[in-house]
Length: 187
Ligand SMILES: [Zn+2]
Image (cartoon, rainbow, N blue to C red; front, side):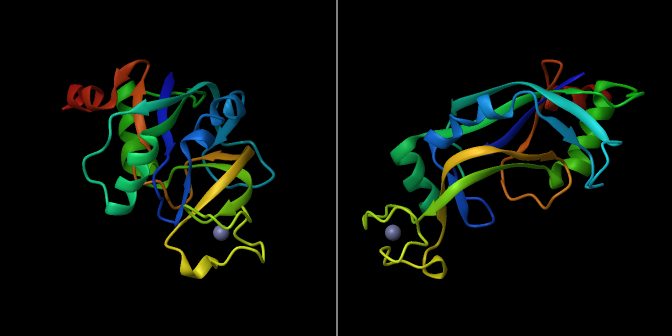
């Protein structure tokens, strides 16, 4: 079975950080081929659950419930998100609806796909320091409402276990069928 997941977007997440649209567009080529796990059993791949087989950066419809801060972001860049298709390798999945339900209820609130990045920048920074931690930057991490991650490097985790920080991260489809339809089918 193939699960399509929206894993991040260019809005400010719960940990006060965001990726710019330009960084989002670099992610697909970095994530394809990575394996995902279902838990943090470090040192073991026993709970491996799938492999990322394709990924896209999408300029999507602008969500309606934006904060003023988020509105400023989409006014500048539009709304961008990154999605990937994961070929799920869990044995004995009874049905697509079951898988959708499981991910929706149990795992969705805990999804995590993490990328490393080179440095953090204050939003709209004009001090030319670039890096928020540079002495040349007049702003400090504590004073800004959020920071931007710059120069995405590589994936360090594809799992469904950490506290979610991307508000709109969710499973979109299984085998090309929208999750809403799968869950309706089951009722
Ligand atoms: Zn700065």
